[in-house]
Length: 427
Image (cartoon, rainbow, N blue to C red; front, side, top):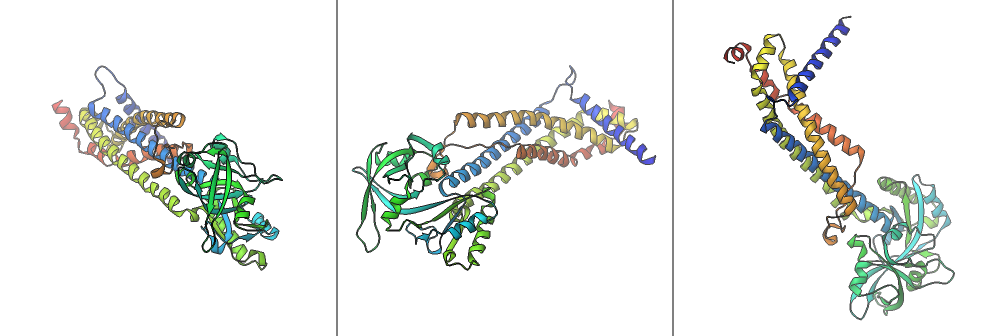
């Protein structure tokens, strides 16, 4: 019975505090929002808009770069241990046993053999270094099909080997090449005469990721095997897709241990590398953006807190007589503090509404129009990416409100200094 009584009393106090705070917030002829309150609303709105933009752009960078790296290099690669991150690596012999070990690893989705060789593209007007990547007929073209801007995908895996290649728009512009043009490639190995071959441009792609676009040229795997003087069962390795990029490192470690302790001769000298390890500089650069996001959020919280504190103190000073009357009627300091905390929360929610409208609106404009461009050489992508997700958006809003209201508990203590006999006497 005592617990029920206390609960009803606490509920009534909360309801009364909220009722008074809500009445204070209603604009009336004699009760218009002050300058400080407007500044507080603008401060919260600006802070929330900036945080939404920062989070959307950072998450967009992470998602787009990771997705495009997956298109170029999959999630995990299996190569000869002497050929990790090398263009002219020692070949790996295709093995049904090794392929079965890969498929049996938890998280496996798809696998494709590939072969790469470093070369030089030469035209009458320019020269460029490239990585010629050979794939088979069952290669997943979904990423390059999305990026295709001219021509068609090269024919690979047919009964008759073709000399079709797919190269990037940046490389095509540099070399003044178009669909249907013939191009000569040179392949130089130490101590040997240069080898050369002619290819036909079947299609042109543009992923927007200059670091990869500038070098990757795709063709039939048999072209690379012939240039490297490999047999039909010799490849550079396997590219593996896992259930998620986040699981790539775990998959690589698990498969690496499996191959290390396997007794078969086929699995000797094989190295398993995740895309995060192969391109650690790119993913470390992306990870550094987390620090930037944290700094932006902290700065926006500090600015909003100081503006809200100023507004709250002004509200308290403006309501000194009301505080004195409520104290004279028996209201305790804790209940009075709750009134102004509710008032601050309502101001914060108004600012959040405007901030979300502006922040989400700008994100959607960028997502649909791609208005803001980037230098692909400096930022890897050619336009600012945005990624909106309900999870972090809700967490950002809830955390912002909770942090502001919690911090404002301290300045609301000023109501304790108000003496009812003085405020009533001089009003």
